Each structure stands twice: as C-alpha cells, then as structure tokens.
Image 1: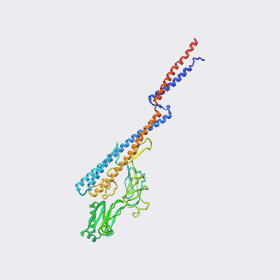
Image 2: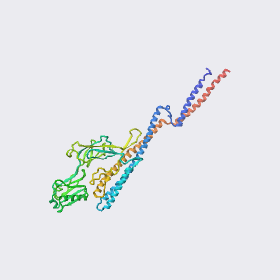
Image 3: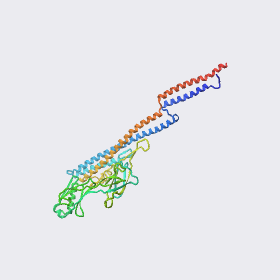
Image 4: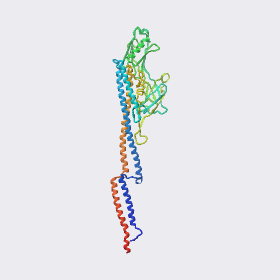
Length: 484
C-alpha cells in the first residue's frame, strides 16, 4: 500500500462527487420551487422549442376565444337593433292595412295613419344611423356590399350577405329576354256609335272590379277617361288608354309573369273577343339574363343572382329594351356591368393566419329598404310610401312586405353565422386550448412526485458525500503515526 501526503485522491474523488450531488440537488430544488422541469434552454433544448411554440399557440387561442366572444356581442347588438326594425315594420304594415279599409276611413284618419308611418320611418332611420358597437357603426351600410351600375337603363338595387366583391372590372350583365307587362288591346275601334249605344266595360285585377257603362252624353275620349277614372277609384293596378287606331288598350302597371287581369265588353272586339265574355289577359314576362356569366333569376325587370354562385343575392334592374328591335339574340345582349365592393365585417376567429370569418351588415335605413319594387304609385323606396290613398296603401304594403323579408333575411343570416360559425368555433377553440395547455404541461411542467424522490436522493447523496469528504481528508493523519 502506497502512502503519500502531497496528494489525496480519495478526498478529490469525494469532493467531485459532492459537487455533482450539490448541482443535482440545486436542480431538484429549482424544479420543485418553480414547478417546471425546463427552466432554461440547457434543461432540454428540444423540449424548450416545442414548449415555447405551444405557449405561443395557447396565447393565440386565448385571444381567438376573446375575439369570438366579442364577435358574438357584435352580432347580438346588430340582431337586437334589427329586431326593433322588424317591430317598426310590422306596425307600419298594420297601419297600411288600416288605411286600405277605404270603406270607413276619412281624410283625418288617413292623415293620422300617414303621420304615424312617417314617425316609424324616422325611428327606423335613427336605429340605422345610431346602432354601433363601441365607435363602430353597424347598420349604416358601411359594413356590407355596395355597388354601382354602369350602363344605360341599368340600376344597382342591392346585394345579400353572400354576394362576393367583383373587383374593378365588375360583373357583366346580359339580357336574353326583355321583361313585358300583361296588356290587351281591342280588335275593334271604339266609335261614337258604340259609345252612345251604351258600351259596358269590365276590368278585374287583383280581386278588384272596375266597371263603366257609357251613355249618350259620352264621346270616345270621355268614355275612355271615365273608364280610366273608374279603374283608379277601384284601386286596380292597370292603365287604360286609347291607341292610335282608336282601340281601347289596357296594360298592367307592373312587369312580370305574376301580373295579369281580366276584361270584358258588351261589344265583341272592343275589349273581349266575345260579347260579355270575361277574358283572361296573358301574363307578362319576367326578364331573363345572366350576371357574370351565371344564369340569374328574373322578377319583373329585376335580375337576381342565383344561389350557389358568386353573385348570389345581387339585384340589378334593367328598364330598357335589349337587342335589335327589342329582341336580344340567343346568347344575350350585354347591357352594362355592376361593380360590387364588399366591406363585410371580418373576425379573426382562430389562432393562425387566414383563420377568419366574415359577415355583411347592410344599410337598413328607409332609403335603402324595398328599393326597386315595382308599384303603381311609383314609390322608389320604403321612405316614399304614402297610405293616404287606397292605391298608395296597397303599394305601401308591397314595399313593407319586401322590407320585412329583407330584414328577416339579414337576421336569419346573422343567427346562422352566430350559431354555426362563432359559437361552434368558440366551443372548438376552448377544447383545443384545453388540450394544448395539457400537452404543454406534459412537456414543461415538473412531475412533483418524481422530483421529490429525486430531491430526497440527491439530498442523501450530498450528505453522504460531505461525510466521506471529511473522512478522506483525515486519512493522511495516519502518516504521523508512522513517522513517530
């Protein structure tokens, strides 16, 4: 056995083990006190990278959850305002129904109804202008599709929440068949003799009947004028005139296949072909054509983008006659274009790029609702309605019904967006967030039971190494005995 005093290998070995045990003990203490098994990159470089990526995703998901909750609040604010608009429209419809009861209404009652309608329109406009979320206005038309028609006799009427933006070129509008009105003209000229003999005219339209029988005091012109007055008084949506051949001509005021009427005359050919035969006039024709190359639905003079296309819900009216002599070729005549810009509300509903959802909110003011609806009173929009006459009240009903359809359609879209997009996505985000937090915890968090066992072991090993170092340092003392 060699005995040396300059070097103590046993003490050095014990000291080295003591340092290693103290380092391990400090690591255990850090993990136990922080709850994390990765406190710095050196604790696990790969695990740190994975953990930090997960943390970034968790933070993004938390913000996306907040975004979804705020988006739901925006939709609920809009839908609540639209509910009030719906209530106002229902009240206006009731007033129009009351005003149509011409058998008992007087001018004072009709004026009162009109004043109430105007008050409701003012309230509707106020809701449209003032509904906002924070400082962002919702129903003033700034968050939906807007359009401009380029072309003679072409008018942009509106769009739906599903209408896509067109870009700078715009959507080409082509007409393959012009709209027409139901119309009939007598085959026999109306003469003084027929009038003086007592010609009786009958016109039925929309369930209303207008009759006029001429007498010896009439001439051709006055007979037609009085027939026209009878039509107006009865509230029929048709016009009566005497054409260049002195034939009586009756034309429906509105275009399309849903408009028709019946006529009869006591002289064959003056209106009906047979004597006193109630003859149904052939219905008008709806416009036919395409928008952006997609076949559109026609209603009167209005083309409506078909479902499932990029122009779904886009409404444009063409008031002219397309094609040579009013007959467009089979492939249609381009009558112009409509440029659509969609400024829809876009929400970031996910934690990554491109995970967004959009919804459009349209102008719900009276000047924008029921635009382009054909009527005999020439009301352009809901703002123009007037219930002080029977015809006006009836036409007001038509526009109010369209406005109700527009508003309920928007509400339906908002409800579907909230339920099927936002709320379902919100539930999915919460589940994803929960699972991702759990996964990140597995990578980064300490297993406290395992760390406590490791801490106890390291503590014992440190105490043992300390004791052994003391013994190793005392070993050279035996040399003194040898020397003495």
